[in-house]
Length: 146
Image 1: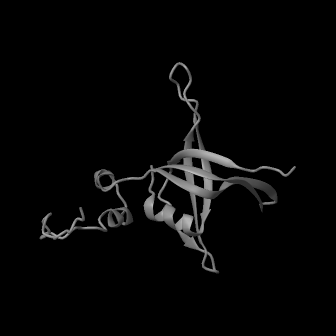
Image 2: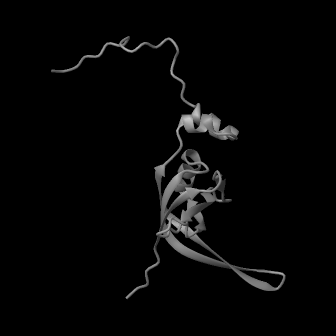
Image 3: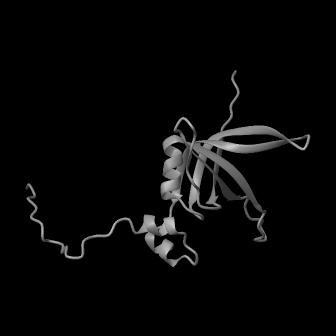
């Protein structure tokens, strides 16, 4: 029987993700989600886990284009552990290598405009579509088949 390595987490993105490209042109983004552990019977929080996530390719580009700090996501992927040495000591870093990132709730234009400290790229994305001022509904002729 083969092994099974699958993780499914839901949480909020901690900071705005940024896309980077590898030397061969593959898109990659690293971001962190905050996932609540739950609430005790007395209403007290059981804490929050901060989980690092890596997404590749079109998934990475979509995460960076449509999600911001605070966006709720569901991440499906596999657990990866990387090791590195610093000052002669070995360290381990565990993260999720995302297969899919489901957008549970992104921010709307109003959310972006009402933020206390919006970043410039968030405002640019939110204002990307501006309808023409002289457009009036009903100006176009529509032939509806009956």
